[in-house]
Image (cartoon, rainbow, N blue to C red; front, top):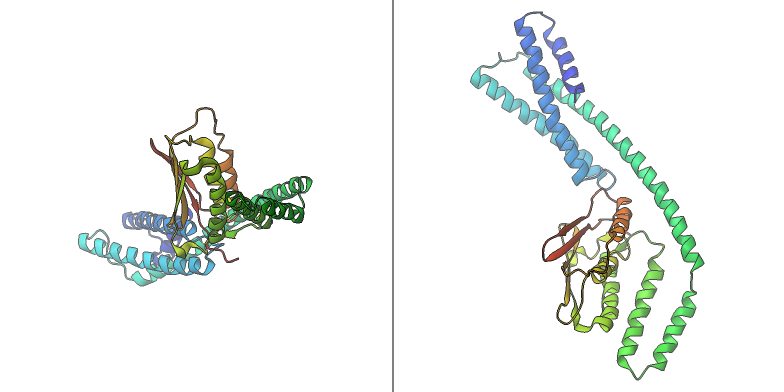
Amino acid sequence: MVIIPVLMTGSGLFLLGIHLDISFINSIGHTVIISGSLWMICRSYVQFLWRRYPWEQFPLKHILLEVVGIFVLTMAFSTILYAVERRFKLMEPADQLWLEILVTLLITYLITGIYEMVYFYRQWIMNFSRSVRLEKDSIEAKYEILKAQINPHFLFNSLNSLTSIVDDNPRAVDYIQDLSEFLRYILGSRDKDLVYLRDELKVLNHYYELQKSRFQENLLISFDIPEKYHLYTLPPLVLQMLVENCIKHNIISREMPLKISISASNESIVVKNNLQRKTDVVSTGQGLKNISERYRYFTNREGSIKETNNEYIVSMPLLIVEL
């Protein structure tokens, strides 16, 4: 923050010349205060752009909004300041007003560029460390899968054979088919970083049918997902893990049915359930932490958890990434 006032003071000395008197000192103080205020406004705007339009996702939009936004902010700030000073006669009108505005704008662009480079470098270091950590975790996870791997062909052939054996039991056939589709999705998505939301919803329906065989009508899941979100992406099996978390930590009975709603809005997926905690299950929060870690590789946006007296609400971001 100190750099801008220092540079503006230097530019003021260059434009006005050095005169060691009260008016000169007032001019320098005026320059420091005004340039510092302008930089705080521009810095807040740049920080907003990093949150709303991250460089790695919206590079062109980020730079265009930054260049145009800083120009508009600088001109608006200078115009308002000039009008206020003339109205209250705080300072004598500057003979080189537009030159001062131009110098202010150029210096603001310069420092913003430096600020962006420092921020970008820090993000690069953080993303590099995260990438190394995730690569290590991925190798370890693949090794664990390899140790416990079941031949997929054998598994699905066995399920098909089981279907023919229980062909006279429709409920059993449906259960096996749902289980088969659910396992097929798990095996097919284990090497994917992101999947479409529409595919997650399909496999979640199979998972829901499997759980209904156990809980009957005591487990109710409703969906409110606008079609425009179907091609948004997220890490695989996030929805299933969130629903599984609801089932694990809440009582499900005829007297106390568990109601889970899944909706999408504001580029986020929201899983909400009525709160009726089990007393014999202690939550470590590790599941939600693992989901958040997977998201950090792709976005700076964070999920949120909210708990009220009656509800438990988890919101996770949806990503705009083409697969």
